[in-house]
Length: 465
Image 1: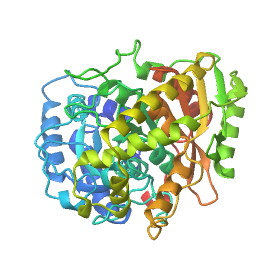
Image 2: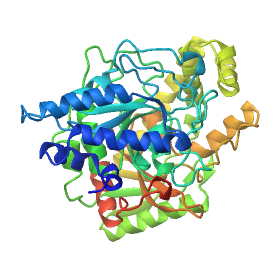
Image 3: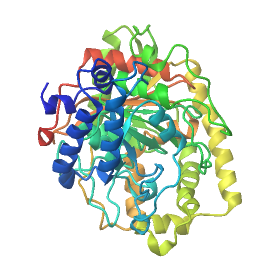
Image 4: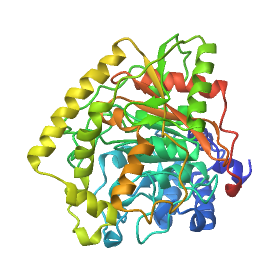
């Protein structure tokens, strides 16, 4: 297997090759570090590359291979961590240049689980400032770019994570999603992204500042990889305010079983914000046509998201104030969002309203197993496309782009983004599958069925070859 093929090999297969001693952890780290050194200056996937730490970890793991056969599931597989999450001893900037010397002194709970699973961390990936935007171009950092077309964004806020996987700069990635920040970048970059159900993945040791709308999750090349990573990062940490029991059987097992006939709803229109563009509509319509051919029961219907829009904005934008960064150190949009932040009473009222409206939307799933939606309402924007707009204009553009995503965050429902084709600019088109409460297994199984019927993994960006 040549180095390019190795770089694009699914994470589970890399783990098997390591266990069989056909490749060493050091071999893998050297392949990815060489690619990062060569391609990241143009791509901007990583803010920080922890080459020395990765090599040291890979050498230790390679030596351990000679003495033990008891290995964790992803032993020696390289991974990237989003730069909103703390890795002890490594810079954590949150996409803000004032924090370039901020060295974390602890591991986030999700990072602890990633290390326990045997992964080797390559570095910290690009994000928007504080994770606020659906593109990854914070002041003071090179913009993250889409490996399928460098003129376009890889999305945000997990833009660097998704582009690192799509370009073969990591085998798999950790991301987080507070309004589409896993699903959007996965869609822009043509990879798989899971936004888990609320309580599935810990937010330890930090508190939950956003009322449960944000969650950590996997970005991967295949549904099976994403499912297996979700297995290892799931579970309770002491003091978690809410949590879900581990699935039986595992999420990986769900990716390997035949999907029974399901009741599937779909929509290309997001009330009250409008319809998706032609490319995104076509992705949904082709997907539901395939689902019908596969024996599922299809109906065009969608809950009304109208009541979510205002309270979700209030809760979501409060994250800027919670970060505690002085206004003068923020980008214009975040400074504007900070100025808009209301009182604690207004936040609590919005959170209560969000929960009330969410109940009616979750009730939609009493008679539906899965809802198929576009991920975004139009194809990716160009890098810098909105940089000269006012904050008000930018914010409205963001709402009109990411409209299909926040419903899963507000309700706590699980969702998965999967690629289904390409648009006229050579950029990926994806759809998202939204599931019942705590029903990641159902959407994972369905996504795997779609992946088998419409294989994607053979596609690689020309830039990365």
